[in-house]
Image (tube, rainbow, N blue to C red; front, side, top):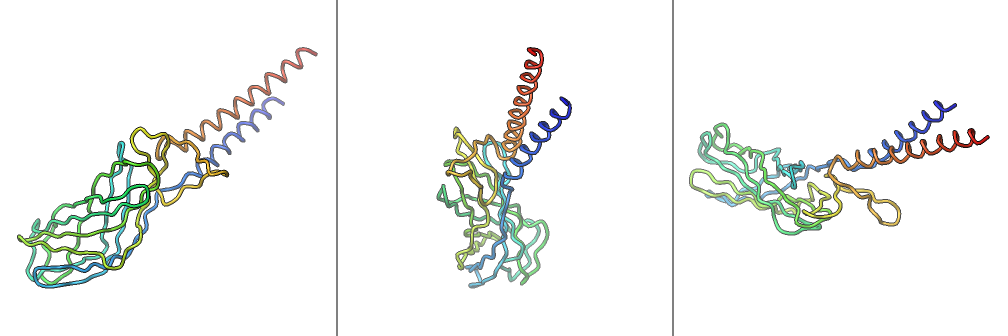
Amino acid sequence: MYPKRTAALASAAALAGSAVLMAAPAARADVVDVNYQCKTPIGDKSAVSPIDIKGVKSGSGYQITMTFEKGVSSSPVDLGKGAMNPSAVIKLGGAESGTLAVKGPANPETVPANTPIKITDLTGTYTPKESGKVTFTPGVLTIKALGTTTTCTPSNSPKVSLTLDVTAAGGGTTGTTGSSQDAPAGGEELPQTGPEDSAIALGTLGGTVLLAGAAGVLWLTRRNQAQR
């Protein structure tokens, strides 16, 4: 009798932990089309590139990576290896405002003349100053090559590519990377301690509570039988 009851309660604990894990929001980044209008040394150019912004937890902050799926400008002459250096700003919104600077390595290979310039991945470190949901939207791109500067400005009000649910240093709660986080009824959010281990911690807590309850039931059952 006791083994069956213990197994049933242990299964309930495992299911409770699984439910908490399933409720935790996953990391999410949307690819958005950005229509760049570029001011170049040889005149104005325009191009649309799908852009993906992702965030990976790193210490007390996040490593943000901005990826271009298509080239956005070109050069009338060959750009030798290492001749072109890209950088950009990402607009912050939601709980924070301002911009985040990101930059990437120089071109690893020669870029032939009059061909789209492939932008290397741009990265930067974001450290939350405010708690809440922070959005990341592609901003101005700058390309420096052969002593010239090309500035490309989004003209189509691009959509948000990434949303992070963050906590500033010293804050009480934090969420995981993603575009949204479900809250329990009543508007109260579950307390969490980290981007990924929080769900595991809560799942473990749920299992601990249920197993403790199981121990209490077994103790009462044995006590009653002993008294009889």
